[in-house]
Figure 1 (cartoon, rainbow over the protein chains, first blue to last red):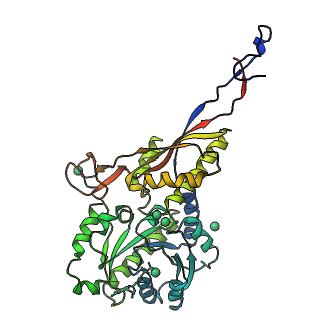
Figure 2 (cartoon, each protein chain N blue to C red; figure 1 turned 120 degrees about the vertical axis):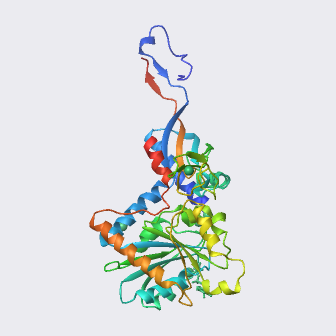
Length: 268
Length: 122
Ligand SMILES: Nc1nc2c(ncn2[C@@H]2O[C@H](COP(=O)(O)OP(=O)(O)OP(=O)(O)O)[C@@H](O)[C@H]2O)c(=O)[nH]1
Ligand SMILES: [Mg+2]
Ligand SMILES: [Zn+2]
Ligand SMILES: [Zn+2]
Ligand SMILES: [Zn+2]
Ligand SMILES: [Zn+2]
């Protein structure tokens, strides 16, 4: 029996014949974000936060820009006001989580091994190993990397991107995907500006505006306690805004969710 | 880099499409990608065979549709082309713009190979 050329057909059985469908290609239109699975998990993570009224903030920067130092200073400053918790993402070591715990704050370390970024599944696993009751602000310190963390939604409400003054003021122009995703840009280690002659805070801000990003830019030094008040005030305002959203049954996705996607889902 | 993670997500999604349509395998996969998605097409293309090894799409061709960067100006309303690190309005120069194209990372379409099957003659 040959199903492809019809040689088994006779005039007598032709009316019963089964016509072979050519082994062919059917084009199926999908139009779905490639990272849809991560994004679905991120939505679930955000539900965890919103149910408890937690504000979740994702901190991103190059390695060593001062994320953990900023957290140490911030946690001490907010100690009597809010309950905070921290998720630390690093390729190796528990060092950053231990630095946070030394400040008396709950910290969970995610050791990513080879993965150079956190994703929503890693964060979800961490959430289920933490006690989130009573937490007001959850900080997620992403793996130090200016490239991939920007592509993965973790379920956070806000992205904060740090740029230390030793890195050069043109970083937003060189890493536009990362800086476009920032809901706030922090220029860190400003105590070192005095010894550097080529970092201009205004230029860094101009590069950020060239990315059409209206995010506030704050200049601070966590080690020398400079400019911390504006940052702490911003955090208080963001927590209040999150509480107002939760009361309305609303949530917020960070700037990482592209405006373009909204346009495309309308046409899709 | 993260392109392997993206390639693995792509394989999972195409796998689901193959299942949904009871197909044998995928022979062509089209991905729409913009420079602002943060994924390098060349790196994704070289990560894809690793992620697809042994799957029902290991022989599929991966094709990219490159989305140009375009912004809509909230000040003057113009829609203009823009560069990756200069997303300002091409008409009036204002930076209050929205990216309308260039940040997508979409599985656009899949061509499936159906196994030869018999269907009744109409
Ligand atoms: N002068 C100065 N040094 C700082 C400041 N903040 C951090 N540092 C130093 O910068 C180095 C890196 O700081 P960390 O806080 O560990 O940086 P990080 O971004 O958490 O680093 P990774 O987690 O490895 O990506 C340390 O030696 C800090 O002491 C600051 O405000 N001023
Ligand atoms: Mg750190
Ligand atoms: Zn990565
Ligand atoms: Zn859960
Ligand atoms: Zn990467
Ligand atoms: Zn304009």
